[in-house]
Length: 161
Ligand code: ZN
Image (cartoon, rainbow, N blue to C red; front, top):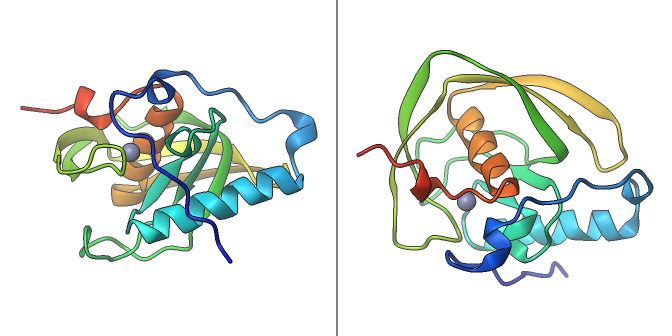
């Protein structure tokens, strides 16, 4: 049975920390896999399209990106959920797109945020395999939102008014 975790809410200190990288000896561990499973279950239970470990009170650099159509984002493209460990955005496109964002940690608030339209990204799988890839549009927006969580930043700090 999947464990659904409590989600940290805006104002809590864990959301303001810079999360620590996953260490070499943590890759492939039952602990890391269990964390990813619980994050995914928690994200799905809340109809989220992404989640970052600090949102479930674990200050580690792990995110899940799972763009898919759902109640909150009916127009989202469908993609397999991707667990990204120690993600690093290598390049941001110059062109930005304005789009609406929400957050499991900021219920009842949504807002327009400018994000790079395309990004190049490096991350590691749960087993420590390095992946370099590119995202554009809504999935790129999710990655930027989740990486912000790893650096203690919430979307409400980036609102375009
Ligand atoms: Zn969020």
